Length: 213
Image 1 (cartoon, rainbow, N blue to C red):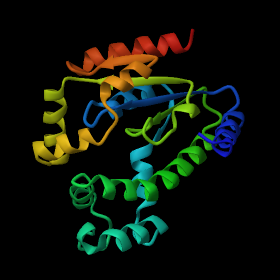
Image 2 (image 1 turned 180 degrees about the horizontal axis):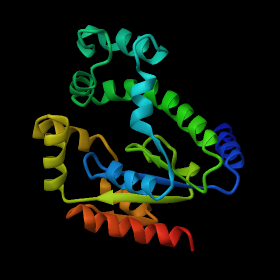
Image 3 (image 1 turned 120 degrees about the horizontal axis):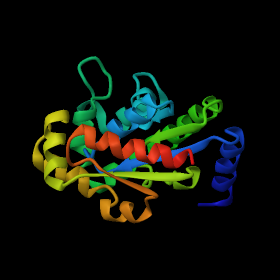
């Protein structure tokens, strides 16, 4: 990261004062958003990168216009909004298309994440829920990293059910992310989301207690 990038992150850290910023990531379908929801129920302020991405690409936005210009009507719904399933089918077949999309989306999403963190400065713990937290270079912004894992089989099953996409499309998306094994090596905390929700909740509660020590 260049000096300008470091300066921006330093400014964000100063704006939130003593708040602890926790990053949550994983691989596609491992269950990070469920973990973030538990932390929210405990009192953390959650900044959801996926919700921000939806907002950033709304019809009429600069990102929407650039995406439409790049991918055409094949990436749009009947109403003219970005159809994320159609767009995903396009970009996860071609690494260059994905790179172009990321060049449009990442700066916009990162800018909004920083704004939301600044607005949450009154909270003691701020959680950044971002599937591409490592890929987007946000790792220097956070104090602690939680990585959520589960088996590849469970991961695929969840994605097929939740996003209504084929197994081969799930695998294409997983392939385009930094390998989960590499993210696990970077983690301060690891949550195994393989089993019952109650088991995952116990793991989150234990991490919460550790954060407050």
